Length: 244
Image (cartoon, rainbow, N blue to C red; front, side, top):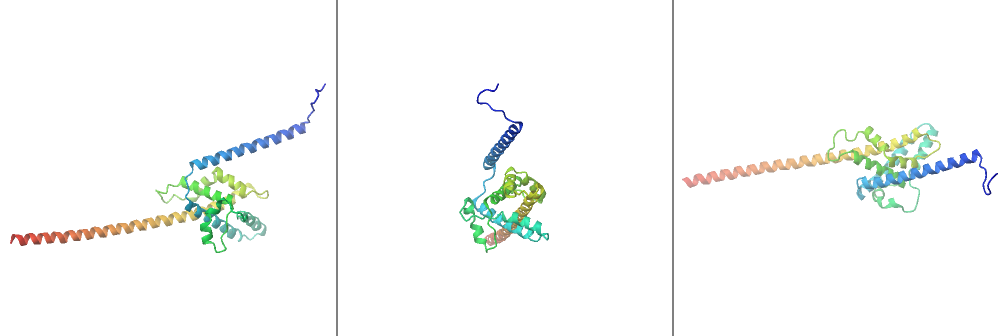
């Protein structure tokens, strides 16, 4: 005999309830992991200055333009349209001022109506690229293997926050997981290319400056030696005159 107020649930209803419960639980776990990773990222990552952040914002726009140029050359129309659509989704469409607006100074200064303004999530992902590079590369001891793309690409792709932002940016039912990774790899490749050239330029500048300073030091030493010799001759001459 049934108790008052109780109802029988079918197997299908129980199964639906368990599925909904599990999905919600997984969502909560993922949300907690994202929050934890974001907190860890903020406390452990190197502080990026406002000037560097403005440069990263500009680089983000450059990467989008480079992707559009690359994908625009694909001959197969369906593939070209799909990839171009993904690249266009990285561009900011909002007319409202957002958090990243304060970093757009360099973008506005360099823009000649050809630069692409990145959306917030894409900019945050590129900034995470920079954080990973700073953790992996010792900029005080740059050597030939400091910017090997394969190793740095793997490290960047393993970053939890990069995975988080890329899942948002490259989300599409039509694309397979491997195709999404290709989009991310293209972004990382352009970023590391720009980053590598920037470091190489800085190292060359420092080397040239160091060589220039060494040259000045050598010249100063020669001048000092000449002055010393002249003084020594003068002393010897005066000493000889005194003896006479």
